[in-house]
Length: 516
Image (tube, rainbow, N blue to C red; front, side, top):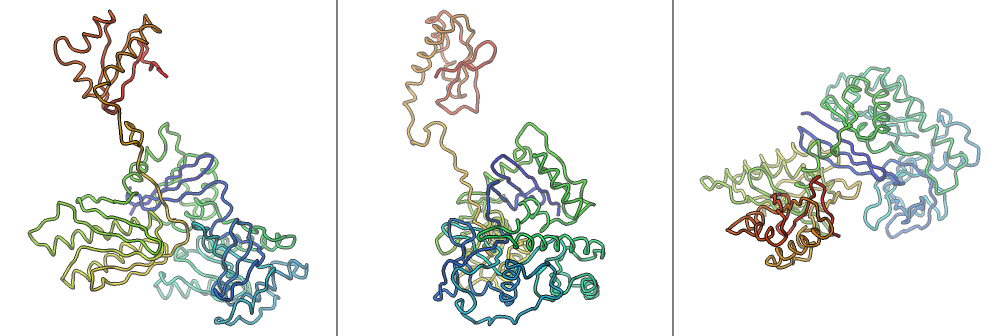
């Protein structure tokens, strides 16, 4: 599978499109002035304790207080808090934890008011960005991610991705990590680390430790609320998480971002430097790579597939509901096989739509009814296969007796919503246009005005093809009548891009004559 990353940078935002086999599967948008991204680390202050919710609201500088639930505190909360307070008071001089005392874990079934107090400083990391009217969601389990590993302070655990299935490779990686990691720092080994040399892993570990040192230094003089560590920009964080051997192209239109990505790849994937290119074309980068067209066709209430089948995607307060419709092209010779074919095509499109729109929470899919149990099992198997490319955590349940499939998908960022509907250029959204019988009167009035203001100009009138045919028909035609009235021949051209009531005048230099 070929993967392409198309990056459109403007002064106010960065848009990132991920294409798999030239098909748009993910769309990310980052405002350049955003202050709250998943992975950012803050020193916050507890504003309120909510024992009923077993949670606290924390001030990290957002307009809405951030939400911190007891289950997101992590077992090493006391150790984290001791490190933060000791650093603030000047007792902890170094970022290293070799001689730092690890305190007992908190009770996993405890209460929020047993471990936190109002106005207490707390070291937190953003787990979910602000969504709708809700503030960010926080965690006290601090993690510093890299491409091959994730660094977790205050524990000695080495965890290896389950996707690395080779037992010998798992043993090699564990032994390797044990030889390079520092005391009281845990490591989560990511799938991308498979087959990597010790030098690659050691270099990345040093970079992650440097970030932890930066947090420690800023913490010494920090006054809450304050940000201690910025997550990577969106382009680099996506590269870190998904870059693999399948990537064959990264195109970016901004020279500075191009250099940033080159620098990132130089450190983490020097073998991929040649796939990055700086786009300098005249057409917008998304248009030249067919991204704009795919955005227009993929968002909205209805998503149509090549067979003519289509999905209807509805959002409610509690969940998303997707209805599968066969359209008018489904063969009726064998209803069961035809239903399976449409359902399998729809399953692939649904998996794409969930990633593309970043839909989270509960999703209910109403597939076309099937009676064959083998077909139902095949649909579930294929749905899980299509969703395997999704980086968000998800669960897919078998079809219920009502033919409904239930899916839950991790919600980390606000759902991507793009309104692809355009205001009608003819009526400007009013639903009404001027009487078409009066169009020729309007044109004649404008001709008289132009003849007075530009008496020596050779006029060309551009109109919709239907109007063009009307003006040229008959003897005498409307064009001839205008010549007799104005003593001047007016050239008429058709333009299929014009709407039915649109027209424009051009001079002999082919410049449009503005009438307003």
